[in-house]
Amino acid sequence: MAARPTTGRRAVIVDIVRTPFGRGREGGALAHRHPVDLLALTLQALQQRTGVDPALIEDVIAGCVLQVGEQAANIGRQAVLAAGWPVAIPAVTLDRKCGSGQQAMEFAAQGIIAGAYDIAVACGVEMMSRIEMKSNRMDRDALGPMHHARYPDGMVHQGISAELIAAEWTLSRRDMDAYALRSHRLADASRDRLRHGIVPIDTVDRDEGIRADTSLEKLAGLKPAYQTAAITGRFPQIGWSVTAGNASQVTDGAGAMLIVEERTAERLGLTPRAAVTAFAVTGSDPILMLTGPIPATRKLLAKTGLTIADIDAFEVNEAFASVVLAWLEATGADPDRVNRYGGAIALGHPVGASGLRLTANLLAALEDTNGRLGLQTMCESGGMANATLIERL
Image: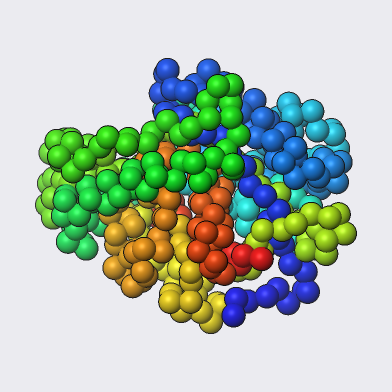
């Protein structure tokens, strides 16, 4: 059985909505939208879908990684105001890198379990077409002398970490391309199934990154994305197999989730879809970086007394194909239970919002298979990972 909070309070998910995911570049399907507006439209859609009175919402917790320019100034609060919600609703914006949206969900659920509030919204947004990666560093050293002293050889790009994982787990280029093809095929086949949870933005109602016509031959024709002579000298074991085709896509998107204390939901006539029942977060080697989902999964299972076979569905973020393939080998999970509707390789990865998309897909998988327990986990820059357990109601 999944662990239940000792407080007697339970955090339940009433519903989740998200935007379509657009390509994160100039000319992308959502690139014309300001990120505050994109998140505000998502909040409005969540309220309309659930019928909850916005005045009852006690906090809004937003994930956003690149908090600079149009995404600065606590974008969660600006979106609350832009949505026309009461000014009394506060908001906070957090950054746990790719896990920001998932962490927003966890903080909201934990606040409800602890009694801090009865109704909260977890959300996230990232407009990668408008705010470029690393632009928040403003060409400054973001690490500092003491960090450099501990790691004198320096950090590496996540793509290099993905290459190191492929080398350590002896994953071939074909293994990774085949997994990428699976992601696109599953995502394409599930477009109609998942449409209900997608909020149309203007005339856009579909994820832009799905490539229904891709093939192993097309994927095999792509060049390695991160090959450099300097890195080859530092890490001679790398085989150079990570490409744009077997990695997540740079993407625009937003998502939002209504989380309510179980008895409050009953009193308000809200029908919950799932309970958020357990949490784990961990750090991992900041060079290998993307292996964090492995210990995070193990930590969550140990806390709940569950085994990997007890979990009916998984969402493991497809930052890179090598991340999921290594996680599968390390945990022994059933591949058919993982990312049933495709993942970030096909759908895209708007880093502040992806955690909400994982939950939406996880819930859909549980509902479609009559499963009970779902686990989602997310690797994060700097060597971290979140894992969250939900129970379908």
